[in-house]
Picture 1: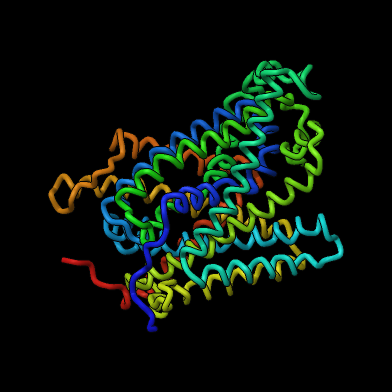
Picture 2: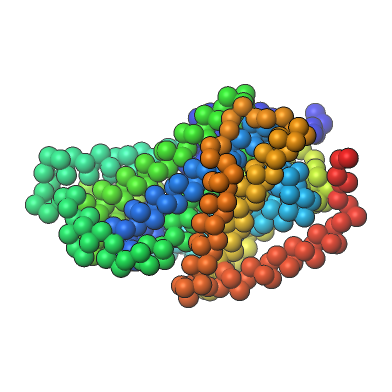
Length: 455
């Protein structure tokens, strides 16, 4: 068999739905939600609603572009077509680097949490084993990746659904150790719904939007979706509501069961509640879910980075080596490079300085906000091209355009500005100019290899 030049369309609706859920619901919900609750109180729910509305329009804009032309390069391809070659170059490479960094952080998380069970194991070893398994799975075939991610994500979904159902039973039937104190009144009885005012809610927006990062993975799956004109609109609509239900539902139950000011910001609220409910092995269960969540995110990272490098090479914005597919129609060269860079996580596990994780998180968030912003701009320019008769209209349309485009862009700018108010995230605004300057140099250096725009 010889390498082919087109990706296999072997991802079904259930794969794509769970891939996006798996890329979005991760360690941030299971571990990071406690700190977010302490920063905003029950008002955190408002931050998730605001972020969810923004994500709704972003995903509908992406869904319209996907049904116009379903390609693996997704938003990088649309950025190039409707915003120019430089925008496509910046978007593609930023998204690749963003997911490489996310995967490195998730591999480190695997190393840390496996040691909860086996404290004598060196932290780098579980990270290395996890990367090896996921690397091999991604090279076999896209269907193998889809199945692996489906089951990874399903574990997280089942855990959250079980948590919500158990919590509702306690609240409605008044049973269990929380029977005397559990009440929806806890959402306003301890300092009000927004104990720190609107500022507290705004300060958590960067945490909220970081938690939603990964929902755009639906776009990267477009080139390998079976029957994309049917699957992609269905997946786009479904993923928005399911993620909102999982996030809002879980957080609502947590703060109704336990007054928000009684939660420990350094302990997962899921572990806290499960242990109080006397669920056997709660700490071990959540540890397993966190490890699965981290593996899921790393799996998505290998998938998305390989496809993005393939797309960049196809458009002359990356080495031609990455444009080749193996006999199984997998962009193996891109996966090789991404996995090689992710190996740095093994080295980081030997020292794991806090500064590295702050830097990783900051770059990740900037890349995410850029990607979402470029989707909205590309969509607006696409609509203008439709009105001018240059391209065909897609059957799946984003509502409230162009007003929604500009409103959500303004919201993303506010989120970016809020990074400055928190010293832990301010580093993002220091690093971002250097990153985009580096991309500018890279674009200039690669310009002779950039394919000319169609006339």
